[in-house]
Amino acid sequence: MRVVLQKVKQASVKSGDYYQSIDQGYCLLVGIGEHTTEEDLKVVAKKIANIRIFEDEQEKMNLSINDVGGKILSISQFTLYANIKKGNRPSFTDAKSPEIAKEMYEKFNEILRGHQLEVFPGVFGEMMDIALINDGPVTIIIESVEGKIQ
Image 1 (tube, rainbow, N blue to C red):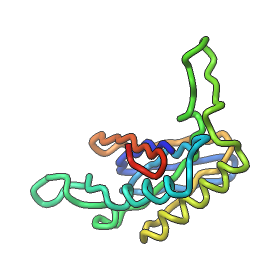
Image 2: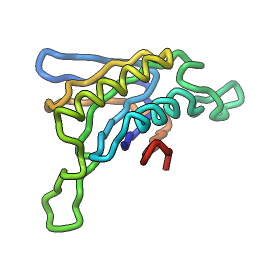
Image 3: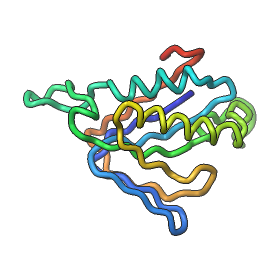
């Protein structure tokens, strides 16, 4: 499992008539790989809930998203598993099949909610317009293999 976490001042997703937006929090690009397990979902969600990258009174990264009342915009992103080793067109065979990936993506969002996080999802499998204002910028890649953060 791969997640690109971006700390944001504001973020939104639009797909057709569907629209979601958040203020302070995280925009997550969520990739479900062929070998992603439920344990990966759990350890990544726990890391996201507990990582301390918001500033305290001393402007030190010391607060979690729950500490600041932030929200999450969660966007499914199978292209995080693009393989570009051969040729110039990416292959996505390392990504989980869409049917299973959708179930796992929805489960991941539920696990995040279980950490008392407010989660606003994108539309799985659809083209989306994503807009955001980075805060920092702070961008962190979180990867889990066999239930362990890499």
